[in-house]
Image (cartoon, rainbow, N blue to C red; front, side):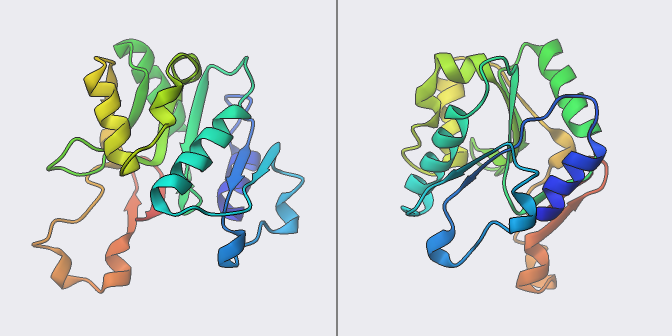
Length: 193
């Protein structure tokens, strides 16, 4: 989290970024480092982590509620994802404008309708008009993709963030901890899935 926020604050200059941290990890022993407090615009502390699905819903909904109404886009970025290049945001927004898409993310699973949430970009007004997209009822990556698909909204895949997962054929050749760490050099992203 510190590295990611530091990169955004010190190197991302194209847009005026408002950094909102939605946090529910206190009961698991995680803390927001005091050094970050001056670099976070809004900190939403959720006392109890209600688990994977409900916890995801809490984080996304509470975080979105704090987004300024004059914002055009919302960038969802998980704490274990480091965004190293601002060009990924710029290019994704350009592609969204050209394709009239309301959401952009990686294809999470090559065999199912799923969108990654490690890094995703959405139009703020779309979420405001469709708040139920954040009412996660099952796996977040599947829920969001199905909502967009079922309601005929345009989304696009961020191809420079794919493939997200190694195929099962390749996995045996890597230690379990190393195949979870994924680098996307073209996009300038490092994540731990």
